[in-house]
Length: 278
Image (cartoon, rainbow, N blue to C red):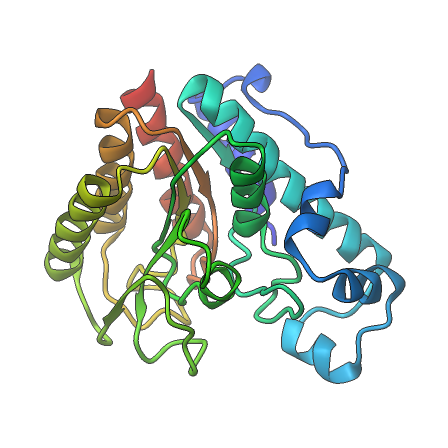
C-alpha cells in the first residue's frame, strides 16, 4: 500500500524524525520458524498453497510477496530489541494479526506480533507480554497462537460486526457496536488498559495501532474522529511511558477514502511518541 511509503516521507519532511531514526531489517527466519508451522512455512515459500488458501489470504502469490512478509516479521522483531533499549520503536508496516500458526487470511501470511513476542519470551527478554490490539478487526490469529500461553496476554478491542465474522476468543475481547464514537471508545480503552497494566504488570507491550477506527474508513463501521484516534494513541503511549514498559507499535489497517487522512492518522502516533519519549 502506498501509505507505507508516504508515512516515512511525511515524517522526514516535517522533521519529526531524521533519516538516522529509521532502520531496515534483515531477513533471518529463525523466529518465524519458532512461531509458525513448518509445513505451512514450506508451502508459503514454495508457492504450494492451495487456491482456497490464497483466496483466504487475499494476495496473488509471488516471490516478492513472500520476501516482503519475511521483511515485515523481522522489522517487528528488531523493533522489539530497539524498544528494550530506547523505550519505544515502530514497524511502519506490520500488524498482520489474522495469521495463525498454519493459516493466513485477511492479507496476513505470517503474524509479526506473534513472531516478535515469541522472540522476547523464548530469549527471556520479557516475562509477561501484553498485546493491545486496537485495529477495528479482531486479532484472531494472535489470539489463536497464544491461546495456551499465559506469558502473552491478548487484548482486542474491535468492531463486533466486522471481519472476521467468526471471532477467536482473546484473553480479553471488547466488541464495539457500529457507530461507536470517541467518548465511549476512549472511556472503555482507558479503564481496561489501566486495569490490565495494574493486574498483569507486563514488561513489554505490542500495540496494533490500526487507524481503521476512524469515521471515514471504508471498512471500519466505527465513528472515531481523527482527534479521537490521536487520543487513543496518546492513552496507550502515556501508559507505557508512565509505567516504564517498552512498547512496539505496528501500523495495522487503514482504508479511508482519503489517503491524506490515513497518513495523518498514522503520523499522529509518531508525533506523539516524539513528544512523550523525546
